[in-house]
Structure formats: structure tokens, C-alpha cells
Image (tube, rainbow over the protein chains, first blue to last red):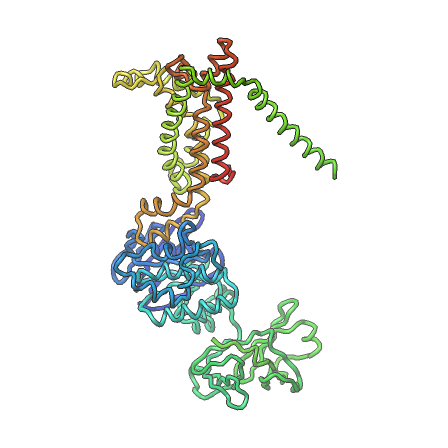
Length: 350
Length: 258
């Protein structure tokens, strides 16, 4: 467990103020915040790179506030990899290795699918390869904590998905605490057990993704993490359509409030979200190929300049974004009965 | 081709031609017989040897002092960092002859100089003085190059090394220094070439005494003042050759970045 108490770090150009955090053993903890919020500085302070002017950091009950980085049993991975350019991939990975543990190398490089590039130099690697090498280097010593500083931000979508899968496996397969810093809310939903939202050097909210995204405690958190139309549900595969069929539930009631179809195949407990701009709103039922159509009524209308945010209650509230022009054409008001429609491809499952 | 483009290219040609004219003006003056007889002379051999040894020693000293200094300036936010940077840059901008005079005053007529001399360290008008003069003029320059080299290496490389079990010293030697390789080789070559070429400070502080503190540039100067044109040209050609060698090494390893 990592316990951070009243931590203050002053780097002149930036200050972290009174950070209090408890990260449980084996937890995947995501720190999310905008650029310049202080997330990297917090991570580097946990690694031992900045000395706090106040407060303490404990690891498994031991005060490591002033401990040298090499004694902290921490692995760190950066967005820009930080592979030593003068050493081969193999030498990079073996950098922190003491001889006895060399058996781990094969297992690790095979798992990360880098066993075929061990002799290459870092500047010949693709972004995804470099990031997996950096992961291997950080993991080879069996650290207690893995610190990830925006590890996916420099990668393309497919590579990102692949590495997310690997990170999920690392989380399941090892007794390791992972602290992951990002500005991307989807990454946090896909990976986090718990999330801390940070801005301007302060922690604003800590909780499970569900709690933070659905019940933001401040306007900043709401605006920053703002995933609209995030619902909890139970997914099954529909044998007729071969689509995922998700029953939306909430904490109070266990029966399905609504059934939604998605092309992403997944079963069990899931979180789903539909982007407000992917939802059509209409007065009459539309005949189309879209799988999801529900009847409800308008509960609120928010004019946001060029776009209008409409909340439609179809058993659960859906946020829909339409243009001012469509809004005027539809001539809807509060309590107008409407239909909302969206495709099975628009339903994201986490 | 536009006038602007034409003009800039023409100036470049003229400038290059001027440099070549000067170099060939020296080399073409040289007769093979004159070169051989001069290079065989005892005085020339002495000054060549003296120049090479003093410049190597002063280069080593420069690196020993400049590497830690430039690292501290590039990495740490300590009290006086900016001021130290400015003061260390000062000798770059003032003439070496002034540096020579300063050294002469400190080591020649103060208690400090006298104390050193009583310990057997005679610096003024001695070969040791040549080393000190070269060091004093060149070390700030070396430091400046290395500050930019170290500033360009992301400190997070060291952080990674330190989380992987290295001490600060270990991460410096295993990561930072190898990554600074081309900058360091470049600065060694420049420091060495400048050390060999140093004249003003050496002349004032070490005295330019024939067969004692006579480096190659001093040999050139003394030959010229004795009317030995061929001797002067021989020294000049050797100095040009050394510059070429330095430039070649520099281009190969330094990547021409400074």
C-alpha cells in the first residue's frame, strides 16, 4: 500500500499542494488531469526524483519519503519511453537486473512480444515496441509498484488497444500496484480500479470510475471527465442478431430498465456509453437500420450557443446533442414526447 | 535565380576563396627543403613536443573541471547558478592576453604565487605556466559546450537508471556520460586544438622563452621576429595540419553541432 500524507512539493514553477492519497496493494490506480495539473510531478515524487518540502510517502508501512529511488522497488515507464539510446533492447531490459533473476527475462519478453527484437537498438523500434521494451525494463526486477506516466499517449489506436490488454494482464497476473497517469478518461475507465482527479496541484476527487464519472463532486471534475450517457449493465450475446444485448440496471433496482444492443461482444457486468452526438432525436419513430430506438420525453433543454443539449428520459436519462437548426426544426419543448435512436456501433462497452 | 539568392551565394564564394587564399598563401611559400630542415631543427622539435604535451595535459585538466561544473550548471537549481554561468562565460569574451596578465599578477606578485613557488610549484615563465594559461583560457569554453550537451539529455533517463538500482554516480557513468559521448569528444578535440593554438595568454604568463616555454605559436612568433620566414611558415603549416586533423575528428564525432 502507498500512503501519501499532506505532501507538498515545490518546484518553483509548480507546486503540489497537500496531496493525501491511499493506494491499495495490487490496485490499478489512475491519476487523471489536464496537461500541467501536476500528475507527472506527483509520479516522479513517488519515484524519488523530487524531495517534498512537507508530508510523507509510505510504502507498506515504511516511510520512503527520503529514500533513494534505487531502494524504493519502483519501476517507471514514460510516455516517451526513455530507453537508453546507447544500449540494445536486451541491455536496456537487463540494465537493472541482477544475475540471479535472469530466468524471468524469457518469460517477460515473450509475454510482451518483444523476444524477437532483443538485439535491436532503441532508435529502430516503433512506438509500440519501444513502450513494451520500457515496460519489460521496469518489470524485470519485480518491483512492488509500477509507475506509468502517460504510457499510451504517444501511440496509435491499435497499438494502444494492444498495450491496454497487456496492462490488464499485468494487473491480473502479478501482485503489483500500478499507478497510471493520464489525461484520457477512456484509458481510466478501461484500466482503473480507482481514479483520482487532479488539477492545479490538488487532488479533487478519488473514487471508482463509476463514482467519479457519474457523480463528479465539482464542476471541474464534471467538465473534465465528463463521459455522458454512462450506464452500468449486464451483457449477454443475443443468439438471433449475434450482438451484445445489455440490460441497463442501476444500484437500486436489479431488473433491466432498458435493453441496448452493441456490436462489441462482451458478457457479464459492463459499463456502456453512447456519445450524445451519435444519438438521433425525432418526433415520430424512424424506420432505419439502427438497432436501438426508445420512446421517452424531453426533461430538459440547455442552450449552449451553436449546439443544444437535450436530456430525454426513456427510463434512464440520455443526453443528446443537436444543432440549433435541428432544434428549431423539431420544435420540441420540455415534456414533448420524442424518440431517440442510435446504432449498435455507437454503443461503447468498457 | 533571385538577386537575394545570388548575392548571398556570391558572398559565400568570396568568403571561402579568401580563407583558401590565406591558407595557400602560407603553404605555397613552403619549400620542401626548407620544411625538412626546419622540422629537423632542435628548436622546432622542442616546441612541437612542448605544444603537444602541454595541450594534452591542459585538455585533461579542462575535462576534469568542466565535466562536473557543466553538469551541475545544467542539472541543479542551486544558489548562484545563473551568476556562476555568467562569470564562467566571461573569459570567453575577453582577450586571452588579458587572462595572461591576470594570471601573471595573481601568481607572480602576490603572496599566493610566492607560497606556491616555495612549495616548488613555479608557474610563472615555466612550462607548467603554459598548461595553466591554456587551461584558464579554454576551460570556460569547454564548460559552455558541455553545459549545452548535458542540458540536452533528459534528466528522466537518470531517474529511470536510479529506479533500476543505480546510485547518482552510477547513473551518471552508465547513462549520462555515454549519451554525452559525441559532445564530450567534440569538446575534447576543440579544447585540445585551442590549447595548441593558444598564444596571447601563454606569451604573457609563461614568457615565450626560447627552448623553455616555446610552444608552436611562440616559435612562429620568435622565428618571424628573427627574420626566419621559413621557420615561421613551417610552424604555421604544422598548426594548419593540426587544425585540419581536429576539424576532421570533430566532424566525425561531434556532428558539427557547436
